[in-house]
Image (cartoon, rainbow, N blue to C red; front, side, top):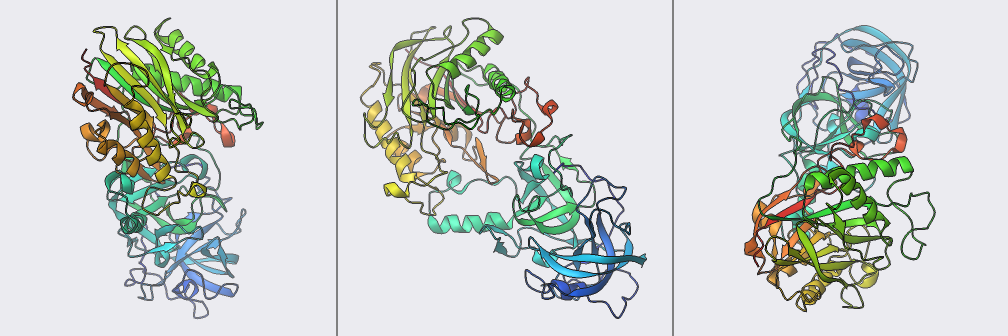
Length: 610
């Protein structure tokens, strides 16, 4: 769907979910059925399939084929007097197709004959006749979050239960926070939450089954979706908001639906009837400023492949894996431009990069060549490892040779070095010792990318426990233990105790894998320096950091600053390189770093001693 801020129609009014009648319409025809009897107290109508005649005031005009092209749900919402029963709604959607015979307007009192039906969970009237019989006024019902209760949708996901407001005109008087923009482009929806930014449970809490269940319940009750009232995809003129921005006094009608037909999140959503006005409180950051003579960063490249994904299994060291990333040369060019812009503005002296094609050198070479073309020849180089392990993606190290130089050869941690480090799950970790040109101080940087949370490890005896850590927690924890023991052997023969493990750990701050590092004497530097509400990634509208810089005891006092550069996690996907679903190519700006990836870069500043 295309998100368009809907112009104010009129100052309309609605009575609310069983509250006292505030409307001033004429008495209904005695032959009509009350809307609250059609809605009933349950999630579906007790009159489903029956022919009825209803009467009420139009509260939301979303007809398709009328003069207003900014909304096209194929019908309109009407509302009648309340029955003072808080369990039943007083509004309903009337579907009248793509070429309505009667053009209605907000404030019209209409009489509708038609059939009651359930459309993807929303009670509707499929109209056979629509007649305007007068005018009326409906006052919006105030709805405060968190909701009194939650309910599971057909996908088994908990959502705020607003069934008693379905089809009604409501207003949210509270300040709501933008929490997810994933489907802004495709379905014109924005996830909003009461109470500010939502954090993933184990970013702030130790894993716990009961605690996590209570967290899921609480988060679900705080949420609603703002929709655009359209059935089309792709924003031509996207609104300039980010996660963390705010909106107050939102007014519209409540609909139960997915983003579009059978696609998108199935939930109660608000179709605005008064122009939404966002408060831009989360400004886009400029170039990062980090104290310290030496800057080390962790950057996830979001599947940067120089092999275009044509659907053939030709990637990976064996040439038999699925490719990822760009689906055309045009997308690849766009993706590379964004990455280079991000890395150039980042200006880190050592960058641990994750999630790029595991080929001999082509992917890193393409990035470094483009960086040098922009910054000057010899400004950047990379550690040449060749392919690493068996996965389609790997980790790597990019550095500025005028600031640091390599000391000795790199080392790899994989299953052959320690069976606890399962390289069929993790990507092999890469260690390289660097020496500062300025003072010959040494530092070993370890680039990591541990097993993701997205697929099960139950076949390895590592099931999901419902404690907030998702899949494969024990696998990540064993990998962490192997990393600690491996570094105790000084795998690069650096002769120096200064180590920092950087990259995508796929573990939030309080999870078992990160706790293991802490118990071994290492320090997770981002939360230590920035506080507990750190984040580098958004998942399902919740924020946390899975990108870490974990320092050895001797290095900790030399780390003087840290920054999570919020250029990606808060941005809508429509700013990335992708051209799927007919996206307008002109939306892309290669000169800005925003949405170069789905993870925010993490940077630490070090005053490295000799």
